[in-house]
Image (cartoon, rainbow, N blue to C red; front, top):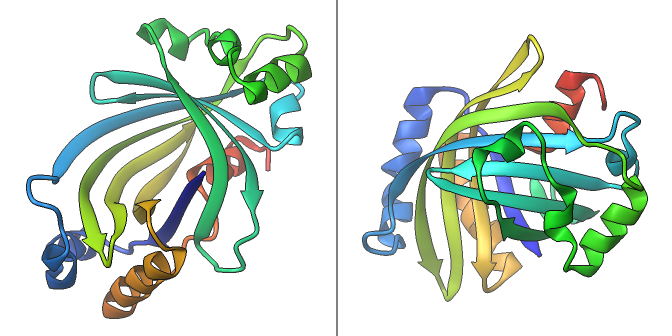
Length: 210
């Protein structure tokens, strides 16, 4: 289960202020900060079977690491900007998957088998991409372990582009209530608004598949 908060960031200057925030610094794990380049490609069938079944199929390059991910079953959290969904990830062999992804990389999971049954042998096509830099660090607050990410880049769907400039706080373990408390504290300090749409939803809309 992936559980995370997302917030819009209005400027690069504000992003840099959040990165230096004293409260976050006080709960940051030592030597956990890193900057990493991200490139992700999202796929579906020509007739959008995955979208209609609430499934996201993503191939992402995280630095030099390639990962395939399925996401599904968004839970209605009742909190704007708070996302909770199931996901599975597997390593991917090489960059060719960005041109021709192999859905059978998920064949060993129950959800992967259901996805393969849904697409019924159809090819997957690129819907949109994201390219961004992630500046991230890990925090520990009252035993709740989270990763804070500051993302800047863009969503690309054909010749259409949309900016990415956001804060994510993803909970790895602990209390959802503590995650929300952390998010509220940071958002209140900088006047941040929740991001009501995920990168996936924004990419779908940009591609005309909302």
